[in-house]
Image (cartoon, rainbow, N blue to C red; front, side):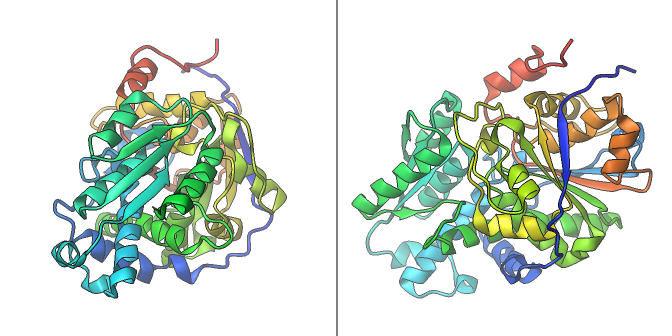
Length: 398
């Protein structure tokens, strides 16, 4: 077997309290899922047990939730955007979310609303899709370097799409400014002072995937010992972890938050115990995680309940993409994009590392471990996916 060392910096969470949040509970997730079930074509995305890979890596089970199959959008993000837009419309027209129906909203709305957002691709596509479903308008801003394929996917849904010459966090600020000037509603999954309600709804919407996963694990008669969650601003990680610790208890779940080293704001925050921002271009292949300022709502959950934080190099995500796309034996193939594959990439990088045994121990992994990972996106940039998986881009250093 090859042995090679990819950069995986692991920091234990010294600020863990185990305090859960009522905002991200089973009750809130189930309410969001009831809404999602009303959308035509809803079905839970698959949870694959990669048993042969688990045997190779020395754990009991590896479970991968495949969000590339979410409503034909190739990513999980619409779960948050659609739920937040529905909640906004319910608030405006005095409808209870439990009574929400697409037909009622379409006949009730007297004037079109415009929803504005910043995205690397997946979130904006979700917001554009949700706005179209509800007969509303969407304006989507993207940071510099955004892939044309991701731009085109948003334009095809009838939204306006503008690529800026700024990084993600500065693009968020531009979106806010333009929305205020134009009277648009901002649907963003990060929070700041005076803007917390909508990101809370988005995070609650993301927890639908966790509610599905728990149901699927119960059907398999397994409980996770570990969960690997990738973080950009930390909204998905916070929403999903909040739900999982409500189900299993924060001390019964070894949770690891994974980020690219070029945008590791949550990792740095975890080391310091308070929010630390990262600036610059953040030119990681994990475009969906290229965020330098943590979501304070997500950060609170992660600080209180996460076990460890990881900062890793791009080659870890690329390795995860290759492993998932080229399965062992009868394991199911998962087409996972750069931001989707990094959790599984960490497991693979540990397996091949010269200090494998020490890293397994550090992460609490052994033959009894049941590891849950979320593949949050498919090949949302097909050209780059092939460059990585076919052509060996971001390969193993020689």
